[in-house]
Length: 307
Image (cartoon, rainbow, N blue to C red):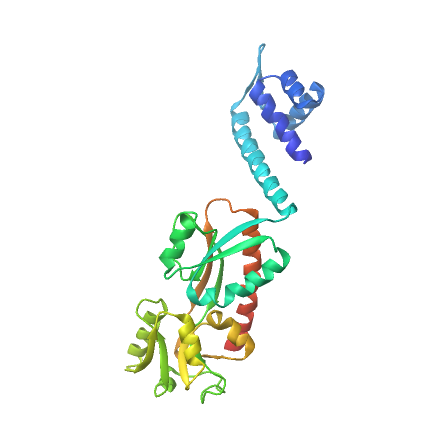
């Protein structure tokens, strides 16, 4: 806080053009203000103020310095406000825009952990169908945070965190292929395949892979619901294709198995946590840190599974 007080000396002198007037407004001795200015000018090796008979005027160096000082003071006010918000009862509301699979799996774990420590904060989860919808929601302020896969770059969107996920084969623990450490896509032919439909980001990756391998699979189920893919894979020897982030809960419970696919070993999807370029609220920043921890934990499990 001492640093901020010294900066306020310079700011007030620049505004009033007088050490005496600045000292009166700041309720300090004029000698204290004068001493700080002289010491700083000596340290910089150049005058900050031009002394005239009527008032103090900023020099060219002073103009540069005062812009920095005022930006610093403004940032300090914002930081103090956010800290005060955290020191309070942490009441408020956070809106998260999220893709379907993550909304039913990864995010609830983060929400439960966050609300144990912040029971007065309300979380709103907005399930949106596409990445563009999520980005729009964050950009226009309807959501504080967005979570999904492979968002394109946008000027008003800030990437808060990125984790790497790989599409793999997902099946029940009693599936005939479940004991394998990795499989080829051709191994899946002949089993009931539950796949994302043409509206989902997963599908083009699968289509390119089947085409490259000259395979013409018959799909038992096509759906735009990650939940349907997960639940259908639990029965009747079905296989679906998802990342470990999509099945975090079932993976932890041992209800589903994730097996890397040989042909997709070097193909990755980016799980991206995004926010607006606007300064986030303290509560939203707090939840982001919580979500980062959960994502990192799942990433570690996914890396161990893949290896």
